[in-house]
Amino acid sequence: MTQTAPDDLEVLHDEEADRYLLRRGGDLVGTLAYRSVDRPGADTVNVFSTTISPAVRGQGLGEVLVRGALDDLRTRGTSVMASCWYVADFLDANADYQDLRADG
Picture 1 (tube, rainbow, N blue to C red):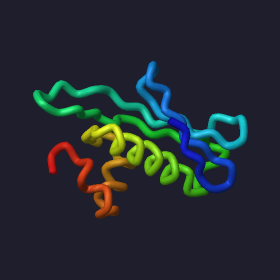
Picture 2 (cartoon, helix red, strand yellow):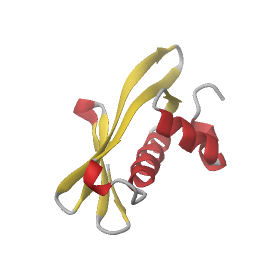
Picture 3 (spheres, rainbow, N blue to C red):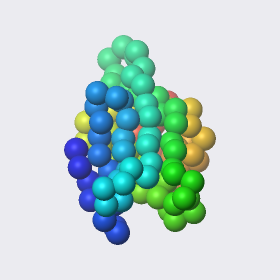
Picture 4 (tube, one colour):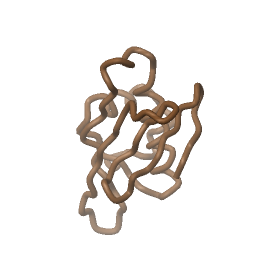
């Protein structure tokens, strides 16, 4: 999956490594890591880490990465548990993503 975001940002799914990548131009500027959770009858992942390169923090890139990843997970029919504080806060603040919660 490749999703184009504003300002030449791309959110890419690296399925082999269980992570999403945020690229600006050709540069990797962020990652969101997850792992599959064993839940009977449900496709669920636990997002445990979101990282943005220190040189580009404070520009809203974390939100671009999280939105891109969650939008892709939604298309896959995957529920989300968030042990990453940033993703948990994002879910709390955005009612339109509540359908992704594994516990809700």
